[in-house]
Structure formats: C-alpha cells, structure tokens
Length: 76
Image (cartoon, rainbow, N blue to C red; front, side, top):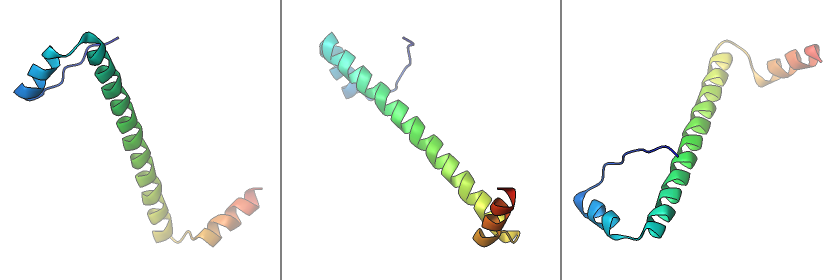
C-alpha cells in the first residue's frame, strides 16, 4: 500500500479522526476505487477526443468514409 495525502476541510478531518478503523478502511477502499474509475474515464475521454480529432483532420484532407472503405478493401 502507498500513502497519499488528501486536503479536506476541518469538519471532515475531525469526523475522520472520530470514526472506527473499520469504517476508515471502507472509506479508503471506496476512495481508491473512485480514483481508479475517474482515471479510466479521463483516459477513455482523451482517446475518444484524439480519435475524433483524427477523423476531423482526415475529413478536412479529403478522406471520407467511402474513401476509407475503398482503401481498406484494397488492402484486404
């Protein structure tokens, strides 16, 4: 396990100190999962954005869906 630091307001810090270790573990696991899910979503969004940008550039340069299909047929 690696340790990270989160900045929270005073009320949250006080509540954290007052809860049981079992609840702290559950919260820690939930936060970890949330971070992982958020990271995956950001990466997926970034990939989709790059693919859309590539499609836009290809279209601007004259490559249509039909032209791409023709190129793929020639390759196959």
